[in-house]
Structure formats: C-alpha cells, structure tokens
Image 1 (cartoon, rainbow, N blue to C red):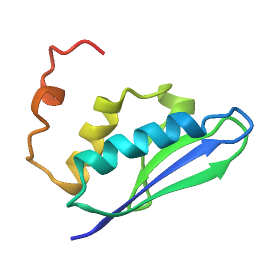
Image 2 (cartoon, one colour):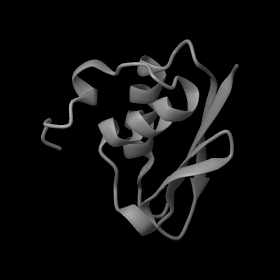
Image 3 (cartoon, rainbow, N blue to C red):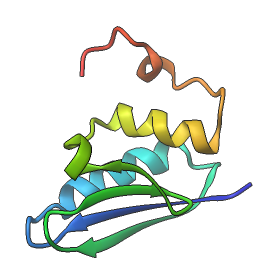
Length: 94
C-alpha cells in the first residue's frame, strides 16, 4: 500500500527549514513506503504532520517533535512491526 505524508508549517514563523529537514528524514527512512511527501505552507504557528490525512503530530498540542518521535508514529501507520534500528531504542536520549 502506498502512503502520503503532509507536513504543514507556518510561513510567518519561518519554519520551512525545519519542515524540509523532517521531510528529508522521513523520505530517507520510508522511501519504499511513501509515494508522496508534501510540504504545505500555513500560518498562525501551525506545524502539523499527517499520514494519509490523519494527524499524527500537532505542535500546538505536543510541541516540536524530535525526528525519532515522528518516525515511530509514521512507521506505526506505514510499516507496522518494522524496526527503526537505533531510533527504536527507548533508552535513547532525545
């Protein structure tokens, strides 16, 4: 099955570099599982990650994510059971 990820970021806050970096991390990790990764400009402090239109991370509720946190959430939806290697270890400091 193919999956789509969308990262909506605030242009007023200049969060494009952060969104692009996270997009690169996700594309590198899930290159076989994702058919599309979209960067969606927004306003008002938005930073939301969606997988197949389901919100998996919202900065307003959870703060800014570490890439490993988002990778786990994306993995759970696009490749359940797959190991993320060192990113999967619970003893890794954020």
